[in-house]
Image 1 (cartoon, one colour):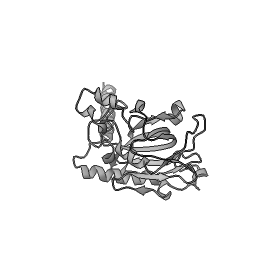
Image 2 (cartoon, rainbow, N blue to C red):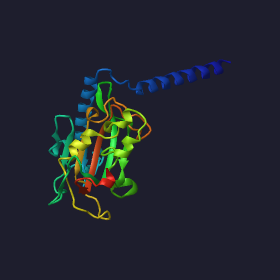
Image 3 (cartoon, rainbow, N blue to C red):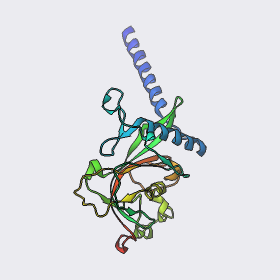
Image 4 (tube, rainbow, N blue to C red):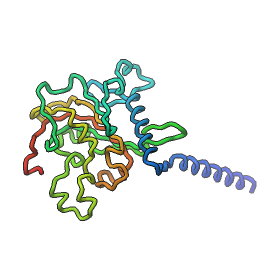
Length: 249
């Protein structure tokens, strides 16, 4: 009987400890949007200090055990430019077209791209992107392996807006990430680069939540909320067409 009591006691203590651990991992979004913006800024800076670009321009995290990445520069050392909106873009040296096409407001793009989303959280005073709330928005580099034309978060076709059944879904901001559009204008596209050509990523665009969906309703991209999420895009522009053809409007 005494042993049974001890087993029950040990089990309840274990359950209690597990419950506390689970509770510690739950993040409560701050009501004050200025706090959210501060979290984003701090987490973005840490992300840029903790990551670099490899020989193909992929974003990689520095390893604490492998010295092979010691000679790479941090993203924060690659001349990042911060726009008034908070969007940051990094143009990768040696990876740009010699005679490229300018990206405008009515430009159709074809791109190899990896886009991830992150939630900046404060854990015991440590503000950083929390892996428990991160994921992939798009990945043609490790996924299908072919460039994509006008991804929905870049440009939503008029027919989608016209057929929408809610007021929110009739707005471009419901689909498009304004900060990505803004950052892309500082890059140039290659001219009809064949899809079969290997990629050499041109740079990075980092979008804080206030320049993405913020706290607004948005299209169901990944089956979970993208409110308050920051986005990091890593890409190469294979082709750009201005103005956008009528068939793609």
